[in-house]
Length: 612
Ligand code: M6R
Image 1: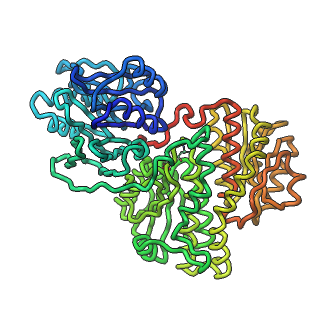
Image 2 (image 1 turned 30 degrees about the horizontal axis):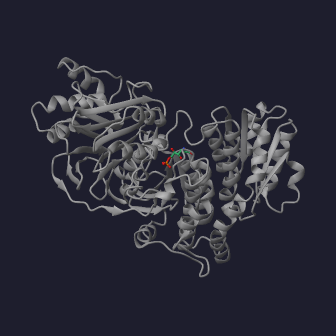
Image 3 (image 1 turned 120 degrees about the horizontal axis):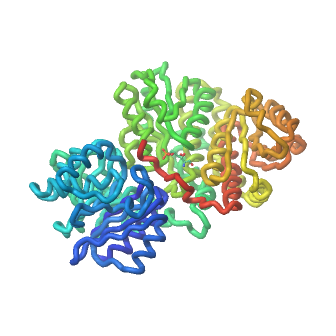
């Protein structure tokens, strides 16, 4: 939520900052702003709406300078408007601040600063930071004033500050909101996320909570809030700039859907040896997993799409590894008073590694003595660093708000984890285990095959694009697929209400809504409950519902049960959620496209939810 950028270098700052912001716009797009420092002092431009409005404003009145800040906003305190857009400045326009997070105690701070004579312009929590530093800088050098101000803040922040009184420095800090430092040649950056700076550098310093950075063109000087120096070398990220661009696709979502075979292959790379029938993990992961107790309980926590991956993982781990598994929405888990102990492993699943609720769940788990295993896509992210062991999904940067390749890679990682644990615990017959290991190796090829069905899926989407209510139904491994299919559609097509259910649950209530022509997407791939799903389809058709059925290739009987049929390669049920995900994603994409929706930036959403 909210993307922030800081830049100091040799070039003209506004172009670099606007380019970086364009790669962070997926974090929020209610309004955007930029502040540049030059010989005239601080110049600020802010605009309501998407980044293109700000770009227009800067084109009309160009900004010159070699140091500055940028921000793209997802509103929390104060409606989206120009006055509430960042950067926020102090009374005299000499200090500018951009912020991502929530200053929870902004009200008492504001009251105090008002009494001290400060004049506020916006309704945001962020503006207090600018005035607080202004006030403290009356008595202290700027860096010290910044540090003292941070000590007064409660809540979460990634914050960057520039001042006309220190024209060669940018200050930054983080607490529970993401912020990285990029080190280039004669230039340096702050950014919420690595893709923002990939075009200029791949050398990145990840910051920890409670660290403060003074950034010059030569790079960062990191200290703790107490002022103690911190030594940390930059790491080189493997993502390349092409992976953060659309590459000829009209939307990031479509590009990322098409990247799935490669992303899954990367996630399996060096971890699966189908020829020898082996799952191989690095030493740290092995040590962690081999150390689990015989009575270990697993608790999966995650949000949104990652939660749906977790539900698939529950079916996998319970059936194949015979381990007890609970799955919790992280936002509920953290307030539920869960019973955890040292025989519990909390598995946190997250693309970004920064989701506030999942991170809070991880911290709660650790406080209660549980172990934490993360399945995460972003190296160096907060959750990856907080976990005892991490299984990275190697999906590459996922930019579209709607998660696609991260989801199928999370399910792939859960399949690897399941097969490793099932073997270790000798809970699975060797022949079945070998079949599954080989099947997993085949998944990337089969995903490509499923993607080849795109034109047919597009045609089905066109047929139903005018509908405004959808049900998605599935059973067992594909009950989570139904939830995920519905989430994809309602997320990117806000005109439509879509609901996912367990197919067997329909007759306990939701079936009452079925009317003639109501579209219901069924996942009816090859499985032990196939016939039960067919019965559920017939129950709906008896009420004149219009059934869009996703079935396995070669299923000769399904045609007579389907009003519209989409097929995917036949696999073991274990892999079917990955196969089903492809048409579900493409169907949502093409329905949204036919409705003219803003697919990569749906209203009210942001990619990483780093506030509660
Ligand atoms: O970064 P995370 O995986 O922790 O994010 C969790 C959810 O916010 C995310 O999956 C969200 O539901 C997606 N926009 C769904 O497409």
